[in-house]
Length: 389
Ligand SMILES: Cc1cc2nc3c(=O)[nH]c(=O)nc-3n(C[C@H](O)[C@H](O)[C@H](O)COP(=O)(O)OP(=O)(O)OC[C@H]3O[C@@H](n4cnc5c(N)ncnc54)[C@H](O)[C@@H]3O)c2cc1C
Image 1 (cartoon, rainbow, N blue to C red):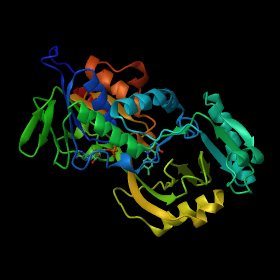
Image 2: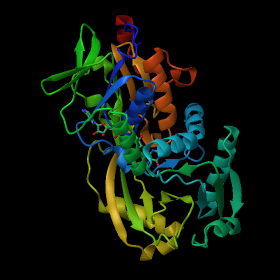
Image 3: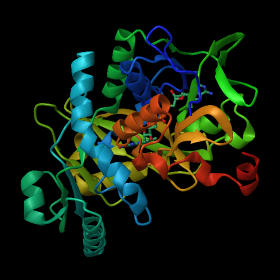
Image 4: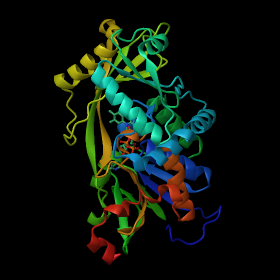
């Protein structure tokens, strides 16, 4: 991959990216910086998918669930890349990204919670995560409005946050400045010929490309024109969220806080994001009373003062979830010329800098760096597909 004639400045590599979410746009930015001729194609507005819906936590530490140990090196590498990625994107776009480095607290409201968090501490510390136990007094020194019933918890200084909506705006800006076409609100289909991807079709028009990247998030398995064996096993995982309004001059919270069944993410502009439900309901975009109730109740238990705050917004998003909850990155034996970049599930904002670098290297050099190899889309291939390739 990409198995194409050598390209020069006057004859650059042509890259078409399906999906202008944070993945598609950050990959486009990286390959445009390297001199490729890249274009993006989205059937809706750029940045309007999970990229808009997310909470923007960069939680390589606390987010690691049992059974996801293999994903930790990629999450950790991407977390380390975030500060420079944010600085570079802010400088090139001239826009703020709302990057905050106060860190994350995970609080226990009962002895059971505390026991669970102590197990998490042992498990995650063994993986190399930088976590520490804190008693109730220390947690409330950092966040005075936490429920006085907090019995203790974890401090994760390296789990930062970024405003994902501002990141999307900044990516749109840098792509515009670099003259990258972003085709939005158009019907999009992969174009194939002679057993390989040859570009993208928007209605009657064929946009030829040497390499096509499939980065359509939770919709990646449904993009028209993708042959069945090349379709990624990615499904939507619904999340309901809401935002309350704090006084930015006297916010109730400064750290990201996790409590039982909830996370609370304070933005600099005073928005307090509450998230999120995890539901296997396909593309059902209904906001439910039960979803809102569970968020509000769990948030109120951790931070009772939310009772007085106005509700600003509520929304639904779809995490792109693969069969093993890990991303699909790189080429597939099922179709030459196609590169996958999807399946980032609940860590896509965190995984953006690493994904952009790995997939860009794969597009430009034809090889996937070591860190990304275990995420080959072909790990799901049926034996018949492998034999046929
Ligand atoms: C509620 C919620 C909370 C989250 N919180 C966090 C968090 O705190 N931290 C974190 O790291 N991650 C978080 N995530 C996960 C993160 O948002 C995603 O993993 C990430 O945004 C995926 O980016 P993407 O570019 O692959 O997908 P998307 O942002 O969904 O972009 C896909 C794009 O493809 C387009 N598209 C769809 N179909 C087609 C088609 N047929 N043709 C062309 N274009 C198409 C869509 O319009 C969309 O613009 C959260 C997700 C949700 C839903």
